[in-house]
Length: 70
Image (cartoon, rainbow, N blue to C red; front, top):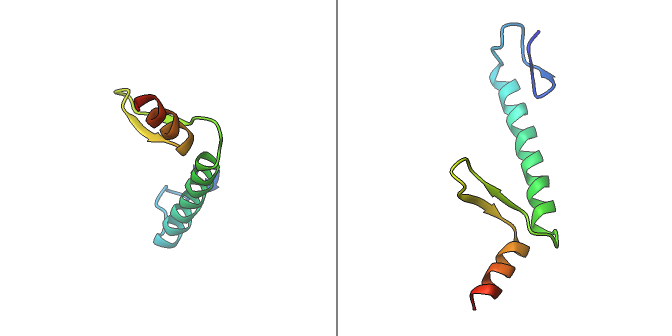
């Protein structure tokens, strides 16, 4: 049995469309919880890609950046 994200995904790694949909919904729920926490945090939270481009910045960081630019 092969696992994906701690969940069994079939004997040969071929997940059914129902399994894929369930895993996608689970991943989207996790992302939603992260975004809720990050957006409501008073701390600055950023994510940078491999080229050091900011791909995400929460509200606290954007506020500090806007304040420093004015």
